[in-house]
Image 1 (cartoon, helix red, strand yellow):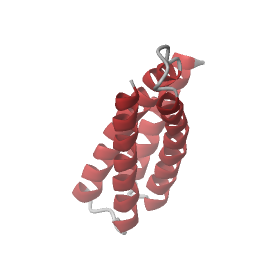
Image 2 (image 1 turned 90 degrees about the vertical axis):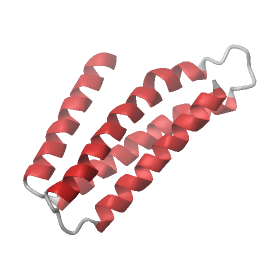
Image 3 (image 1 turned 180 degrees about the horizontal axis):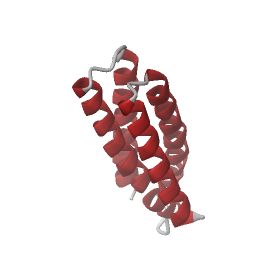
Length: 120
């Protein structure tokens, strides 16, 4: 399911993002942010495993971080930057909640990447 699941996730998220931005639907963008938050908590689990096993010479948990958390963070961060840019460009209202959620998620993903790289 690995690469196929990733492709389905990317295409599905991109279509959902496109629909939300095209229709100026705050509901659709909020649901997409909630989906991104759930996925980032799952990726955070792999980061936590890598952090806990950092003292061992063979850190197999770091493989989960490298193969799951890093690609997820890259894809989601790119989509969030696109979302934030188009929220301003298309003047989607009300945008305060969307911007706070997206910004906090970017900070959370950045913290995950920082801790994962230090664990490696």
